Image (cartoon, rainbow, N blue to C red; front, side):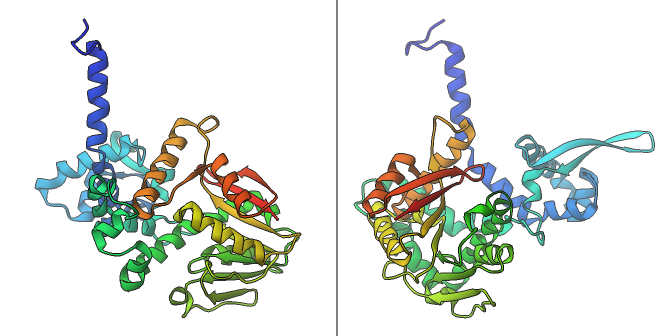
Length: 354
């Protein structure tokens, strides 16, 4: 039976399900935040085996009136892939328990790969609240939702708020630790190089990983002076305070990890031109960033890339780019050629040559 809008009843209810799912999607993020704030991944990890609800609420000292609510959150997080529901046997009795998954293992504090700082920063009220301004933002020339909500651009806000800047650097550092996995599969990228400049390299986590993998490679981290002023280098790692829009230290290669997606096309061209001046005719620029490719990517991966594109657009008037958009930037900056390689679940590696 068709309704007055031409769709059958089944289609209408499918639409309602999709609509409600996204209307309440903020609960997904807040459930993750709750899980990390209570340290549940750490509790399960330290328990050394799957944990029952009774054991979990006892560890957390949850009031009896809230035990059901903890259960509802755990069941929902398990449904979304953050816990695995398993059966453990105590004598002859089987009990349901929760085990970590590959996703929640990344939230266990103190491990080499831990994205908890990144999650906490992204879900901080200061990071989330500006997105209530999207309706107004779309009509404002040049302004970002950060400009509208906080009264200044994102980078100025970090400079003016040391505590928030510290959280940002910790978040970026935790994300950069994932490079450990990447280097195992693409160490060929740095072979034959004597020096590399990590532009916008934050506190240098990525460069430290590269230095450990290639002890004979000299790494230079270029960052804003207030970011690197108290950081200590090593035999093959140096920190330089500067501005990538003005100049970049000379080296065999320049690394831009998740940097260019923070800037609009005009700014990216300026940065890339400075990169070209910093390397020799036999050098290269190494970009690690998102490349949107709906034809090749799985639906979920494209969804993540499109989501990140919205975040960058709203927050920084920047964007994630397709191969054609990357090609346009590269050629306008004066480079001759490029190659794109798959890197991680959602990041690609782009090598560009002068």
